[in-house]
Structure formats: structure tokens, C-alpha cells
Image 1: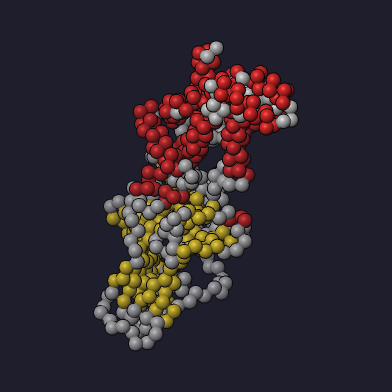
Image 2: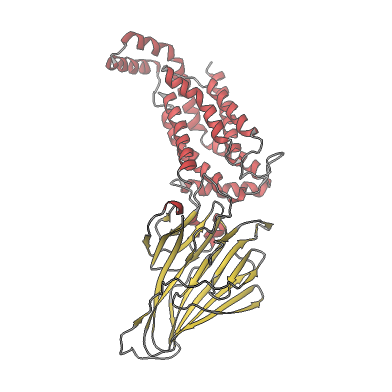
Length: 502
């Protein structure tokens, strides 16, 4: 029974990996505020609701200019006042290459009032900030879009100022979002989600862009964005609604709101735009809930502290490979009472295998008498059939949390271990560690007592080291180092128990 649970646990892990492989994947934004330029009485005439003209327009020649900091580069569309493309240039002081959010054909990130079609730009630089302002108008409506780009941050702060110079109240639509396909140039990862997403204050909503066939709408998202495994482009403000809209096998993602502007008045909408790495602490410090773009899963409450502890260890050893090994040792020590109890129980169960075989031969197909006889055997020998099961079940959340931690930690990107492992975020180029890991699984299996008598179950169990080795061939090296270390520690622990109870 204990062996069966081990098999179930292993297969559960395998199902999780297979599912992800083939099916998965510092400033609080200010609310809308009104800033009146003149005292006005409430209008006597009803307000005019401005509508968006969706008639296809002839595309004009795109004229752009770039704003670059040590952190990021933004290419602006001079006419529309939107971001044509954005690139992350560095992380932790190290230069990056090809981390570009670019749709190739349209503005990639847009902050727009759809009824205004043309803007004039102005760029100024003041100390640590570069300010880009675009001014456009349509009838009685004047719009200013302002981006404040810090040289020391991935977060761009900005505002849209909507002014009404007429004598009627105007209902003005405001749209912000990202165009489909902007992460196509980034390295794909088959184990994690990449595509459009939004956070509605309760849950992170995602859609597989290539499978989206109709518009999907959510109320009041805090931000909308596009994500890859390690990088995020997002726009945050209190939206009224958010939309995933299919577009040529990709998907646009919009955040919509509107403002009512009285005559001789103006409305200001503050927004934040982030283009940068998905480092948990960094995103959390902004106070925009952008850290919700990192999917740690249902055991996030365990995964996040593990990530923080991993970084603390790294602060001392300055090598993430060694930090992973030490973290694995710490987790193993903390779970030692559980694993010890489980292994001792399995050892006792293994010693009963001959007697269990005799009972099966004696009672044959009479399952009721067989079960009764087995329970009497357990009682006589002082063995709890669940003694090896429960401790292992309690470890499952820790296993999945650590799996997620190492899979999603951007800190491992480009982090070397030793020798041929120069990047813990990608697979072992020579497959050495996965093969050694598979060998340790085989050794551990041989050392572990078994009460399994069914030939089919025995064959499936024997295949597991080969299956896991095959799956781990393309896993990030950091994950393989964790699993290999855990196997070696388990072998040492099993050897000690086997020798002590011999």
C-alpha cells in the first residue's frame, strides 16, 4: 500500500509536468481625479458622448523616435503618441539581448483617447527623468499624454489630461492596452504561460492567444499586460473593464474607461506602464499587484518564502547552484521527521511481503477474508499501513512549491553553476545531470523495501526512473540540480535506516 502511494505520488508529479508541457504553459496608481481650470455651473444641455470611429484608415508612414535609459528603451510613434516597441536592456546590472515587446506592424503599447488621431511630441530631460509629452485635439477636445521615464526604474509613470474647451459636457472614451503578438521574439518556454493577461483584484486572468476565438471581458481590472516566462509588459490604472480580443491567431488586450468633462474643465487619469523583469520583490515594491503575473500556483504561500530564502542563501554563497543545493538540504532537514517515519514504515511493510503473499495464496479471490487477515497481520506486527502514506502526502505541497519556485525564478536566468552548466534556467547542454538523476532514482528504488506483489505495478514502478529521466532532459538545470540533490539525500537516509533496522 505504501509502495502504491509512492507510485501515485510519482505519477502525479509526472501528470503535472506533462500538463504544463502540453497544455499549460513602487508607486500606487492614483485614481481618476478631476482638475477644473475654471468654476463652471452644471451644464443645462445633456452631455455629448464621443464615439470611436472604427472605419479602417489608410496607414500613414510611421515616424518614430527613441528614449533610452540603462534599464529600457522605448520607441514612440511620433504621430499617435503610443509606444511602438519596448525593450528591456539590463537586469541586475547585466546587459540583455533581444528582450523586445514589438508587434512589428502596429503600436505595441497604447495609451490613447480613440477619438483623437494625431499628436505632436515634445521631449524634455531633467536629472534622472525623461519626460515625453504628446498633444492632440479633435473639435472641442484637447488631449495631452505625458510619460515620465526614470533612468533608474522599469516603471514609467504618466497621465492623460483631457480638456474641454467647448460649451457642452463631453463623455470621452479612454483605452489602454497591448497589441497581440508582442512577445513573439522572446524565447518560448513550454512549461510556463506566455501571452495576454490581466488582474481583476481577485484573480489573474489569462487566455491562450492562439486559441481565442471570441472576445472575453472582465470587470474592473487593475492592470492589463503581456507576459513571457521572465518578462512582463503591463499598463495599470483603475479600468472599468478589460477585454481579450482575438486578432490573427494572437490577441489584443484592452483596458477601457471613460471620463466626463464639463465645459472649460479638464480630467486627469494617472497610469503606470511597466516593461521589465518579473522579479517578485521588484514587482511587489511597486504596489500595483504586478507580482500576480508570476504564477506560483496553489502553493504560492510556500513557494514565495522559499524564493526569498533562496535569495538569502545566494547572498552568502554567490552561486545559485550551490544555493539550490543548500535550500534542498534545509528542506530535507525540516521534513526529516516525516520522511524518516515514512521510510521506517515502508521498511516494516517490506518485511511483511512474504507473509502477505502467503495470505493471498491462502484466501485467493475472497477479498473480504484477505483484507481481514491483512489487518490482523498489521496489528500483530505493529505496522500502520498508512504510516508511510501520510508523511509523504504532507510533503506534496512542498515538492510542488519548490518546483514552481525554481521554474519561475528569474534570478536563475544566466546564472552559472560550474563547468558546463553556465545557465541554470536552461537545460543541461550535455544531459549529464538528468542522466545521473535517473541513476539515483534507480538506486533509491532498489534500496526501498516493497510490498507490491502485482506484476503490472512492479513493471510500471521500474519504468519510472526512465520516464523521469526522459522528462528531465529538457528541464531547466536548476530543477534537475534540486531533484538530484534530493535523491542523493534520500539514498543516504534510506541506507542509514536499512542498516539500523537490519
